[in-house]
Amino acid sequence: MTNFNNSFERFFKTNEYRQNRFIMRIILWVFISVPFLLLGRMSGIFPMFDYNIIVIDSIIFMVGYFTALILEKIRPYSPAIKYILLFTVEMNVIVISLGEGSLVYITYVIVPLLSCIYLNKNFCIKVLISAYILMLLSLYYRAYYLVPSYTSGITSIRWLIQYTAGLTVEYILIAAVVFILATRNASIFKADYNEVVKAFNSQREITSSYVAMLSQKHPALESHLIRCSNYVEIICSHLQKNRKYSDILTDNTIFNYVTASYLHDIGIISIPDYILNKKTPLNEAEMKILKTHTILGYNLIKENMSQMDHDYLQILCDMTLFHHEHWDGNGYPYGITSEKIPLAGRIMAGANYIDNFLTGAPFREPVSFEVMLEEITKMAGTVLDPEIVKVIVRAAPDIRAVYESQKY
Image 1 (cartoon, rainbow, N blue to C red):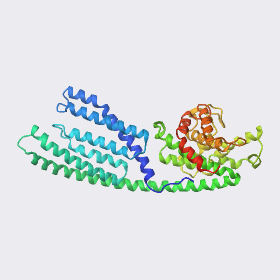
Image 2: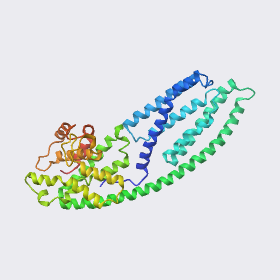
Image 3: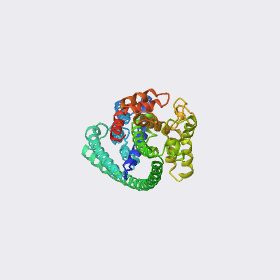
Image 4: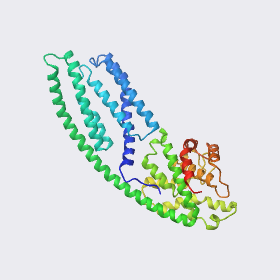
């Protein structure tokens, strides 16, 4: 059974990913506003706003945004992304604050406040300290290089002391607010986390009991389920890097997919033993009965597992009911096509075919790993989702590692 790490790591990663996307949207919208800033400067609405600042800020936004975007495509849950995004915002705040005549010191607290959305108190403290140091450096630069150009009767050192003292008091007040918010959010998050852990442990226990029942019904089935769960995890992890699915396949959702995959054949419990244990190919009537295991499994889940978490239950139902549907509509039980087949069913189908080829489906000889890849590739656009096939080919080294570690 797949392991659930009893820590905040999985949940913080998911939250970080979502908040990274939120900040990326903010940066994008700010960048889109640049032409309007230029028009405002040209029309005299922002007479003191320097063209150089607009250009520099635009460059910083582009570099930061596209660096984060590229890294997100490669490693969607990389912790470096949030640092890149917040640093991008902080650099823009500093550039604007250094503009001659720009009295926007309060913007120094934007990044610490943004850091609260990551629900990590230690991270917020680091951001608070870093942003304060950068504020002091920018004030020093302003005092000794910009103040003389637009003030009179005040020395640089006096200006620096006055503004440093004033802004430090403001900053301490904001820091207290940030700390309180971060602490409160962490407490709420911990409570939510504990509830999720209880739900996961419950569904894992129920899943384990049904896997034991399946193994008694058909001894070879347990090994098939274990291998398929490994393949599902690999497919999901690689598919997660696709921007189309990155919002859907969070780390939490992948955990649900992997756990649910153990029960995709739960309907086998209701299939007569004489069909499961038959040594010769099934006739048409027997095959028809065997194919009912998808609907039988779905009904079994609905009748006996309604107390499970709703999201997990939906994934489990989709995997059980749709893992024999074909992309071109020639599968069963309903003959639906393409993306009308739920993603969980399409992923489970890919994992199922990998194992069937490598171990030998009923009344079929097993094939080599290379032949399996060739056969899977031929199924793109007919039996399997073309995107799932691409992922399987791309993840071939990981799949091979699982294949070679198992006893077939």
